[in-house]
Structure formats: structure tokens, C-alpha cells
Image 1 (cartoon, rainbow, N blue to C red):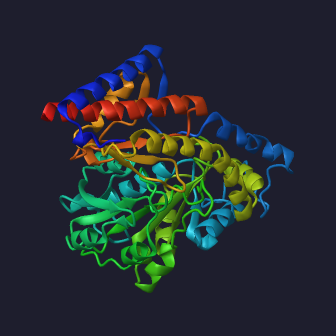
Image 2 (image 1 turned 90 degrees about the horizontal axis):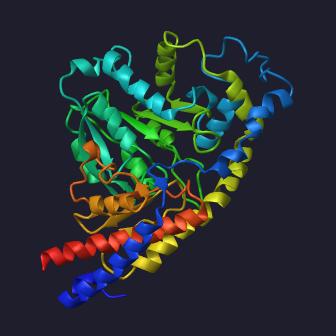
Image 3 (image 1 turned 45 degrees about the vertical axis):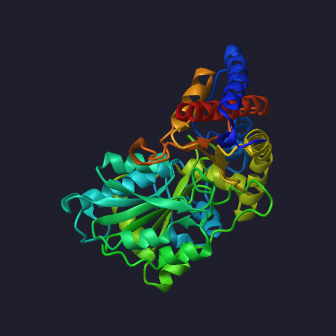
Length: 427
């Protein structure tokens, strides 16, 4: 396939007419498909229906320690639930608090508490410290950015490399005492699917921020979400942080949102002894206890960390063909054109596509007009501003295989059309 940049004016025009005809044919089909978010498919949700029956089917409402899960008690969650997450995350049960269904809620709540009461007991609340900033690996997760924006936290871009955040940039940035933290997805990052290298994890754990209340929100959303064989391995950050006396700097969250049900799963926070104690004290004023019946359901179905991993293999069997379709489509239709690059993740929920500079918004708009809704261009950057207008997040989990094949054909046509328009404008 010829590089578009090497085509003559006549060749550009002829190629444009051909691709435009393909686009018009798709537009005439009246597709209706939303791929804006990484939602589990109905087949994945159907997998977890046993969770709803597990309490009645398996010996009632009593937890292993005798707790009646219908009543008050167990503020930090059931031990059997803690055990599953503790083993999967490589920490002790005492480092785990089991919460409601949303890790996003945990993150929002934690930042809110830092704003009003400080990051540790006796710390000055962030609200009283003037302008504060967060380091933001980019491209990144839009919900992280929206939390910062909600609280008026200034966001500073840190480029994402295949090994994780550019540590040279981050290490320099945290010398500023107004920089109070960083959100990150360390395994199968959103949207690129990168996993932080061992060196990156060690350098993060060894950071020497000027702010003693600097906190890293370690959003380990895809901790067991391998899709292909020989998935990535993420180095456990807590032992590395302990070597540097920095264990209080890390607040880890995870959930079953893409394991069982996004709206009815369970989420956990994993943290140091000091942070667990502080969070528990604040929870005492906030809630009597989270949904222990739901915790019990999950514990009885997943059983242990090995059961969790087997469960995830079933998810992988559903997701793998979809990622194959995305990657094969990009290789087949765009390889060699010189107008796009993309990631090839081994797990997680997304593929990151970078199109010709200045074309991402146009590609998303072309797809929308033809019936396929993608994540808004710019969403993977703070304030929705992609400085080069290149990045598009592909979320292949929800559509059927046939729908996804159509969507990817259309996306590749849109990428070509937007690039040809740009090149012809520059002639």
C-alpha cells in the first residue's frame, strides 16, 4: 500500500473519490452503534448471573466469621472478599477495605477528603493551599481528568511511553510543592493498553516529591484482565514503596466492574496501614457499612484468587475475537499508508489509535454521521484538549462480532478520508 504522503495530486484525488464512495455506501446503510465507552457485552454480563442466586443456593446469609450479612457490621468488608483481592493484588487482608460497587466513587471520595481534611491526619487541607496541581499521564482516562476538573485541580500533561509515564518529566514535575498527586492506570492503561515497566514502577515508588502530602491514585482497573496468552505482569508497587519509606504515598483501587457487573459489583481500596486507619476513621462518619450481601455473593462465586483467574479466562474468550477484529482491521486497511499508528495490547479494554495530526475530531465526526459513535476526540486529554488532535480510543467490548467488523471498516475508511482531505488541503 502506498504512502499517502507520496501520492501525486491526481492520485490523491482519485483515491479520495474511491474512499468517499465507500464512505457514502456505509452512510446509506443507517448503522446505529455506540462504542463510546468500554462496556461489557451482554454475553459477559450473562456469565455472572449466578452471583444473584448464590446467597440462597449456598447456605444462606452467614459469612465465614458468622456475620449475618443482612445486618449492620463489618465496616471494612467481609474477610473472604478481602482475601480474594489481597491475593490478587499482592497485599495483606489488613491493607484492604471492601467498599461499594464503584472504584471511581472511591477515587472521587478520597480526593474530596484530601481537599477538605488533608491527605493525612494533621495535614493542611488541599483547599487551603492555593492552586494545586496533578500530574496527568496522557493519553489517559477521562474520568480521572473530570475529577481533577471538578475540584479545580490544575492538570499538567506527562507523556505516556510504552513503559509508562515519562519518568524524567514526572521526577522534575514533583519538585514543585503545588503538585499534589497523580492518577494512573498501571496495567493495560486506558486507552493504550500499556503496562508500566518494572523500572517505571520502581522510579514511581522512589519519587521524592516536594509536597509531603503527594498521593498517587494507583487505579489498577485491569489487574486480572489479560486477553491473550502470556499477558503482562505488573510489579507490585507496595514493597517497592516500602523500601523507600513511601508506602503512604500510594492509594490503590480496583473493582469487579468488568468482572461481574459494572452497576452491581464490588470495589476495594488497598493502602498502607496508616492510610487504611485514616480512611476507616472517616468512613465511620460516612456509612454504617457497604452491601455485605453483594460481597458474599461475589465471594461464593469467585471463591479465591484461582477462581477469579479462571473466571477471567471466560471473559478473555469473549473479548479475544473482538480485539483480533480490531487489530486485523487496522493492519489490513491502514498498514503502509503512513496515516495512523495503533497499540497492540495484551489485555484491558481498549486500543489506542493515533491518526494524522489534526484529524481525530474529523474521523470521529465522520463515523458519527455514518452511525458509529466513538469516544469524543480529545477525551483522553485533560480539559478534552488533545494538543495535536490525533488520539482516538477504540472500545471493542460491547458490539457483536458482526457489528464490530462493520464499525472497524467504517473507522478505517474515515481515517483514510480525513487524511486525504488534509493532504489535499495542503496541496
